[in-house]
Length: 241
Ligand SMILES: Nc1ncnc2c1ncn2[C@@H]1O[C@H](COP(=O)(O)OP(=O)(O)O)[C@@H](O)[C@H]1O
Ligand SMILES: [Mg+2]
Image 1 (cartoon, protein in one colour):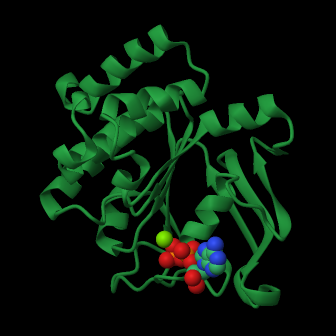
Image 2 (image 1 turned 60 degrees about the vertical axis):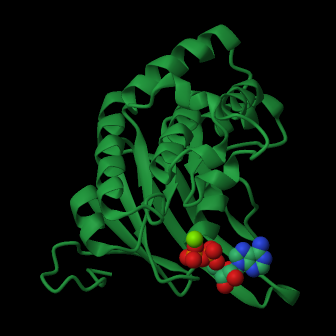
């Protein structure tokens, strides 16, 4: 049994007046260490909500989130800082995470400051990461509107990897890119995962991409998580349940 690095246990989350819209309903899910797990589900099924809960950017109505087998006490500054370094997020719209008024380098170094990384060390690691994601250092002197979708996603990856995380939550991170760029980014993500021993939660809706990229997939439907069988010949989402 692979070790769980990030887990949700019996989690319920609702929105709206009197919490009338239930997005997660006593859901259980464990992200296994050093593996790529896909999270699938139709639009609006609650994938991003689940991601935000795992990232501890939102709170559960019921249930709990465990990191390496224990709850994280967000009231403790050190614990919460360490958690937010360890578990990073890449979104579908990376440009919304970069301030349009600042050059990319400033945004990246601001993230390093928030994570309280030593500036010289962060700078060194950034150079190493840029090389790995195949981005010329000069790109960082541009503003967000001066780079392509693929380039900004690569810079977003560098920023996320700067604090040496062990988990990346990739929320439809290639869905805005055209097919050839998407393939490049997915290949890059694979290399990074191996090199840095990362654990991924790969949120996606394309079954072919999921089949190729991941070794396990779960489906979020009606507030619950179910295992999927990726080897179903017809590509249907429903597995062993
Ligand atoms: N902060 C919020 N306030 C109210 N409703 C929300 C909020 N966040 C998400 N929702 C609702 O929860 C449901 C699930 O949304 P989301 O997690 O974004 O789904 P997905 O990522 O699978 O498309 C949607 O109906 C959405 O409108
Ligand atoms: Mg979403």
